[in-house]
Image (tube, rainbow, N blue to C red; front, side, top):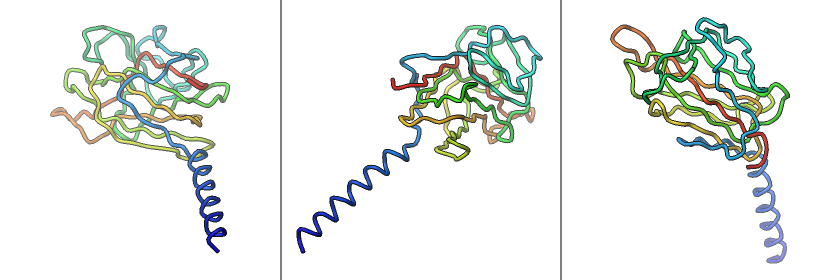
Length: 190
């Protein structure tokens, strides 16, 4: 009887361990997460008012319902880096990011800012990752403008959606609008 119980417990532990590996979720980090860059997007070639519907750079598809803006300081770091944000703002508008060749993303990071740079020093970042159309993780975090945010997932995800939360609205009635620059992807083991 004891032997059967021990075998049953061992099998249960093995199944739990195997299930844990197969259902890994991405880990959000308020720091860079890509050690080996396989693809990157700097947005240096875009101009203000360029459409961001299915914008592609270095094999990365960045899709947003809005327009590019460049040449102003959305990152609170003293530089005029080229950048983009989508004008709608708020949680009803997302930036979808995926790989053109369908590769899974295991490491991902970018510099985050806010499209209404004079009014905010932080951004309320909403994010959600997907694998085969199923949500694998999500979050709502407050990050400093100009910081690097990243994700690590040992299984990988095929797309990530990011947005600025609509909870912060300035005195002019403007919601936050996400700004992204220096996007980096790792598609293999880091």
